[in-house]
Amino acid sequence: MLFKLHPDTPKFQVFVLLNQELIYFLNKSIKQQRFGRRLFSYTVVGTACWDNYKIPSGKSDLTRDKFKKLFENLKNETEGTREQLHRLVLDNQDLSSFFLTPNPALLDFLLPNTFEAFKVLAAHLYGATKDLQPIINAAGGVNIHEHFEAFRVETLNGNICKACGMRELAPFRANIGVENQWRADYDHQLCKSKYPLFAVHPDNLIPLCDVCNQDAKKAKNLFATEDISLRYSFYPFSEEANSYISLTIENLRDPSPIVKIRWNTGEGRLVNKLDTWDDVYEIKNRAEGHFTNIEQIIENEIDPTEFEYFQQQVQRRTRSISGRTLKSKPWAYWYHKFFCELDSIHEDDKVAFWERSRFVHNNAKEAVDYIFKI
Ligand SMILES: [Zn+2]
Image 1 (cartoon, rainbow, N blue to C red):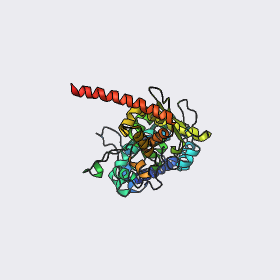
Image 2 (cartoon, helix red, strand yellow):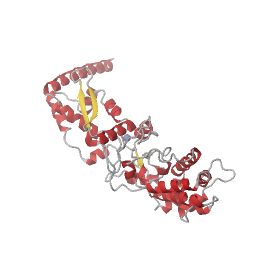
Image 3 (cartoon, protein in one colour):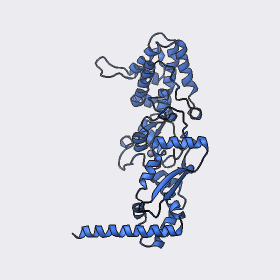
Image 4 (cartoon, rainbow, N blue to C red):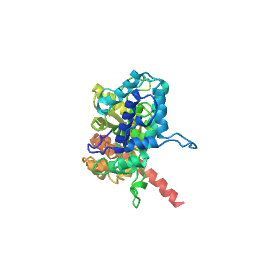
């Protein structure tokens, strides 16, 4: 995460309840011989899960059916294994300690079919069961749309993605009720296909922008590289990358100066977490890519007419930015870094850069004037 989450970020109560129900079910599955109502808690949530099943003509299985499949597979495991699964889920409820000592092979002791059934149930709890009205009612009436609006209020997290700082979570539309606002997808920090035990854990789900969630992260594993060696990751509620980033502008006198992003720390574990963050969300490529055409950025941002004005405007943009701006303006963090760097370069380089960008600008302008004339 570029920025950690606000400490008062509300937990989505529907996930709290579903997570409790899942643990209850795993516990009851240790001893119970047959699939039945007693595997579920005698609460509104337990009843809602039990009552949600495929009618004979139904096309696809519903919540109860998914629980049943997992139960049947658990019966193929030993009682010791079922106990081990329940104990392990219970012992790993504190995600901050899991981030401290991650174990990507957590569920490797299960038979492949059991793991598969667990995954299918987990995906269903997240994708469908969370929207059952009795469960929403039991969770104080707050559905996922309302939770998202509470998450992004400006006094808490704001509408800018915490992972990248580059995009809005979702556009806010006037004249539209909460139910119909567009919302960001909730990213499973620990993806549900590899860590089904955290599929509805309330601390595991964080709204992210579509690029972070859908284009960059997908199902990447926060704790294992592609060659499955162990790596570490920032815990989104308490750790952040923003003070370890250095942005430099290189080849300033070349036709195409470039922006490079690096880490300003050599501390092993921290570098490992920064590298994971970069690998998962493609931070460096996206930031360096955004600043590919520096002259265009300066024209868009400042459109300077004189060197003195250019210098003043660059300097003005080095003033520290408020938390409110960081939470409401895409790229604010990155532009601030960029202008601080531009301001700090040697005067001669600055003049040379300025002269060249003027030249490019004037040529481009003449071309545009020419197009308008004909
Ligand atoms: Zn993002």
